[in-house]
Image (cartoon, rainbow, N blue to C red; front, side):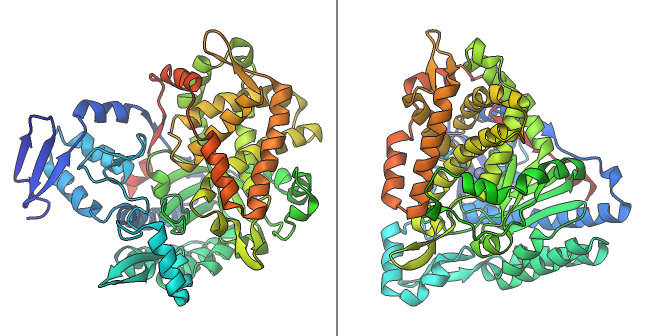
Length: 554
Ligand code: ZN
């Protein structure tokens, strides 16, 4: 009976239950609330002029998009074990009242509202910190004590590519290749098919090694091959970010970006990337904390997104990313920054301009610009590749990520933002970026923070921005005018950027979990004056909701 809706009941509390083979799907949030939430995400058609690609490569792209759809399915299970059943029940309902819930479920990849601190809108189950990566009742202490008592399990348990499950009274680590074989086997076959068809040899190499990795859980070679992509198609597919694992911060979520490269814009950005060592040298920390071991092969690509899947598609959309996360690859080859130009432009138009119009004081407002926004995003991504990566802690080699555990994402995102500001100023002073940008940089950064913080401060990016905004306010870098608008002080802002960059870099260099926890405890909050400004933004879409025409063609 699974998936068959036997009855729809509206309870006196306004909670609707879809009885489904004895199990109920409870619609916890009101229909009006769901529609309001969906209105926060402006639908935008994302595409690229595929006419520039040879027909054969368009077919390659479509095969990759087909494979990418399996990342949707795998991520859905990573978020919540009940998700496939919930999805089937919602789809089977075929009811106008249910459709908005179904739509929102698909946007959120589950019954928890990513725009509202993961509050359930279907059912009442609270989202476990570790999503579906761990048994729902497993605590951090349970995990750590298991490792302490079973040191041989450390590697598989801390692996990015295993699910932790209970078997009788034991904990076991199940490799992704096994747990997700229903998704990874067909995805691998499609990637092999695309590899055989493409005339882009660098792409064929990556697609083949990534397909192999889906079956072996060894992603190293395919991450190396991904660094060498040189053609028109840029593709990310597999398990990458660990943000969804709020318990330990170890487990990687499945996602995909399928993009077409903008070669001319990419060449423009390559200049800045070529300066990585020089930028590392400029970091405001003592020289012995600087990390010159990373490779210098760190291209920046500017692309247009034609399809995304899984983790990255859930809730808020990404404008740029820096991969791979494997420190071994980063030290051997550096990392690659990919900027999603059509996504950036869509967000700037739909979400950014209406916000700064509302929150900034007139003198600050007239200094914001698209360049101020664009270059900071660019340098944010460059900055993920700067600073400590592999560190020595108590005589043992480890990574900043492992040392800072679940706090790492917050600290690393804040670091990338703040060091990104610091480096933009440096490039202006050095004459690489135009002097006129200085007048726009701080005003644009301040305005942009209100957009990020609207996502909530539980998620790593929002939390990182709350730390910056509150720190900058305390340093006098910005202040609130009598009518509740925000005014920037460039001189103090510049000083505050330097001191906060230093704090964040030292936390990473020392792998100092306690200092990270203290900083987050002190600054992760929405203060009343910020709340008042955010309250005036209710009319502005929080983000975009991508619509991909390529999906209709496969
Ligand atoms: Zn980032």
